[in-house]
View 1 (cartoon, rainbow, N blue to C red):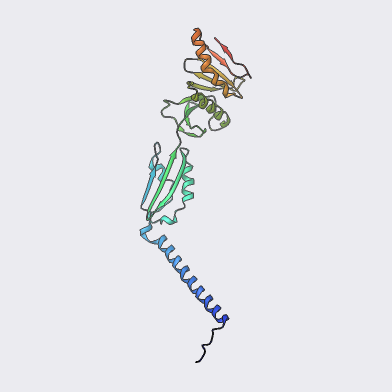
View 2 (cartoon, rainbow, N blue to C red):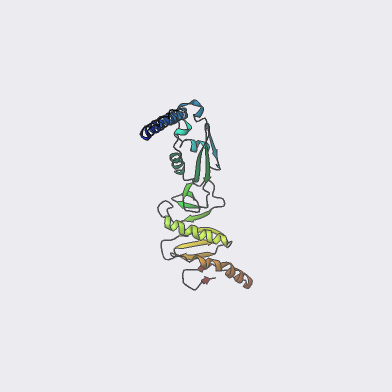
Length: 240
């Protein structure tokens, strides 16, 4: 019997390399073809935009921030860029943008909620818990008024006032108005019932937690405070 000649290892390596290159070329062409289809076939054109979570904003305000022509492929949309544009709207706190194949864009929005309003030059502006200015206040019902600062340029003072308001609500202390004075009195709280509370320029918010006990004790004695000063360490000054 005649023995079969063995193919030299070098020839085998050349064949394997050639086959690998051919396979790679086929896969590359397939990827290019699929990409072309995804970007050009009408099946993947953006046809629907679903916006969820809106309470105060309108859909039109969000749609105006989405750069898309009638023949835009859903794969050609820059989701990060769309998210940044939507987040440029002060009323938007968080946003998630997703593709839903074949032709839908889903936008989920969490809006900011007004927490207080700030009076400035005859106008009133809504601000949220983080001090973000939202829009001019059309309805101030349920919002505590803060006066004496510019909400756009005096952020540190605004945050101090908001912190006092947040702490007060945890102890059920009803604040009618917060006034920011430029002098030594600093932050002044005007409570429901007419009592004024001076917090000062460097507030110790913990002292507010003593007020419910002070008011209850005064009520039992038939007394009524007009002014309570919390500016000083380890002491509370009350005036009748």
